[in-house]
Length: 179
Image (cartoon, rainbow, N blue to C red):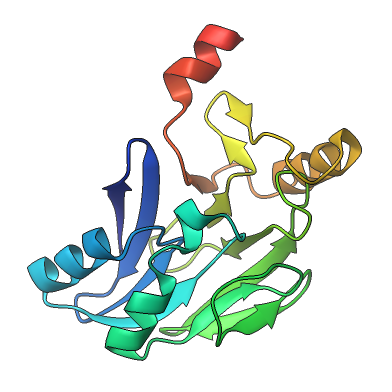
């Protein structure tokens, strides 16, 4: 599997994971970078994973689903473009032979989820955490409480130490300046 960050807007990342033929995208706020990457790598879109309802994470979902028929997976307690399969803590979704575990991570939004992919053949574990965790910081609290965010961060810190964190924004320098 190849992991590819697709820049979008001014500081978003749409994450693409592909096997050379089929791809999964996470939090496609804009469809065009995904369409471009699919064409460039000659890939079929197999699934769309969504972590939370904000438009910079869902804005491209409807267009991608309409154009490809790729199933959409998203948080059970969030309003995202339908149709989608809802997930919450403890659920598992199988996509392209990979087993993604769902973790509830409220704080940034009330129903935010993350997708954890345990280590596989020659691959470290992967975490698609949306706007919960960033390099040098965490997401703003729009709907959740500080206690919820702390519990969410504690849950993520319990993951294996070699987990590769795929956050949805590039805030590193701003977070480090703030710290």
